[in-house]
Image 1: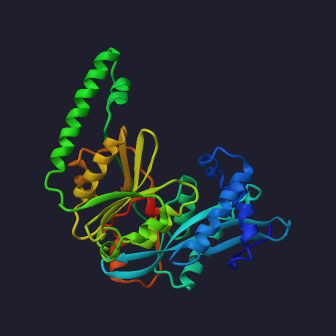
Image 2: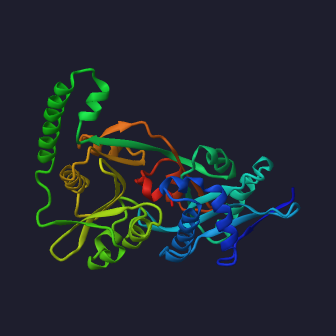
Image 3: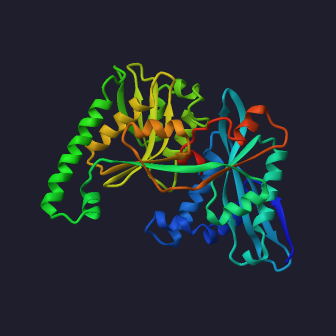
Length: 365
């Protein structure tokens, strides 16, 4: 098999890329109950989302093309540009994603050449750092291509309604379980009220689902505070979550009387469960203040649990434990590739000497 890996030309390779996505990205079918035609439409929306709507610009994409047997495009990978401020230093950064290889030629091993080609292209385009959140199939290939581990993710959950958990874990009569759950739930609610004591006065909350609603607020306090999480900004939150073509995300925002946003939580929600995927803070707001307001809202919505995933960070984990979040098994490696000539801060990050706070929503696209 003769194969070449080349940098894609924006627009010209769209149909080839969409055809490959339709073959390789079957996970999208789990996000819609519709058939293949709807999947095709969803992938077309994703192409527009990643190529036309990202405020940091179109992705860098490489395509593997099989020449000898006329198979056409058989593999792809992209780097999606993001904002990344590392302790005051602005870096050109991206997230590696949409890594796919056709079933027709996986035995011939195009995966590693694709990863190496996308990192070479990233070097040539001046990227300082490329981040990745690979699944188990892609992890070894990305490590061989030059990515290094930044650590693993940690999942935590806060139980708001303990009835189902008590039913599964005990063999008590149902009426006893129901009464016990009510007592546990009441205790948890009272504990949350105590945790909420001393919250910043004069703040209001709102839940946004329409991207245009974000324009009603000033996000300067979020945009300018980068120590908490390196990727947060109004433009990123709007694009990553409210413009998402495949998942119905929402933003819970706190703001003052002048509509200056001081904190935000990106989340997805079912009838009984809330998953926090990202958190943005201003310098004037504490994590506890933001999280407890959000948790109390979830209680009003009759949610049974609130979960959150993030790159392992001892300080963040300690703060969440104090809010009665408990660890759950959820380990997945987060990796990074850096250009050979980087600053001391980037090298310290790779060596684990600088703490990094990133939530799962910001690790992938």
